[in-house]
Image 1 (cartoon, rainbow, N blue to C red):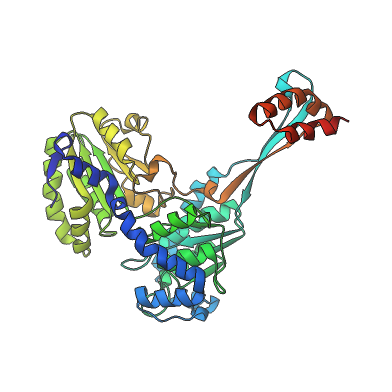
Image 2 (cartoon, rainbow, N blue to C red; image 1 turned 30 degrees about the horizontal axis):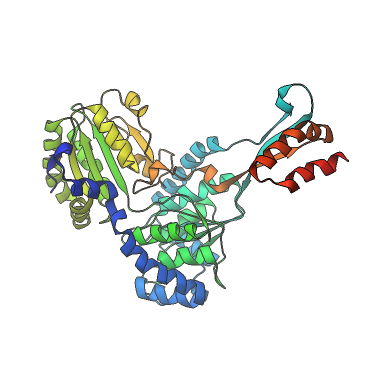
Length: 438
């Protein structure tokens, strides 16, 4: 199990391993991902079927990809009423938070240099994506919550068509609880397709699977690599690189060690690639959490996954003071950051890089995973330095516009010509102004 270490005593290699997590394997991962994408681009549905058979162990033809409406109705009878009720509560909570994110269109009437001459209009409006693909992972667990987290903001944004893809089970269909969650959230189309082949099919399109403008949702290292790679080629937009789950707990000696230990384990149970880190200024807390991890892990059904996760990407780090700890947090840029210190709101003001932040003893990550209302589709692997988590704005494009008059253009003409000459000279730019004054 994890042993506490002082940050200053870490070797350069250990420090790099902690910061990079599964990103360190990206070259190897891409070498497996790219050929799959290329095959889907060449052979479409046939390649999707072949890779589904290879990776999911189930033989599906293209006609089996689409989940029929009758099948969704039947799923409601097989999912417990308690789960359905909780999913509806989750939908309502997610809706209530995300509706406040809706931006407003606006326009202004102004004059050139605000000097009272040459009145014109500037504005901006938000336009939703036409088609969006939502990826919901499968495999070792089922994630109906992810369906709701992605679909509800997309609906609020006004997306034209929402298409969900999730891996089929050995029975040939995605988990019934995922079907129900997606239906509750308002999905338009569901596909029994998962993995890299699903991301490729959504990004590129096949005879059966519509090409989308944006792909959102978390996944394993391969799914995440596929999203990032296809986005880099300009084939599709993405929300954020959202790979294996991670948590960083920032704590001082006021923290409850049992809370810390169990929160670390709550993310370690997701995947062997998950990352769980404690950063603390208290040696006593570090030692207590270490002991509790060994004790608590024995009670969980996913113990083996937790052990592998902690072995690969877990750490208990001791730092000299809170400022040093905050600097490490901002360098690490965690998906989930729990702050269990005195005055956590004050510490929050110093945090620049994190997907989502959880303040105090009674704000565990699990609450936001399901019911608090914030989104759990968040950047991982240090990408919180440059990406935000999924929101209503993820599904919107910002368009700016202007409407000028002949008089306004005349006032601007000399400066436009000066700048066009300095940059090019771009004579045609200048001529496009001059011709309107003739």
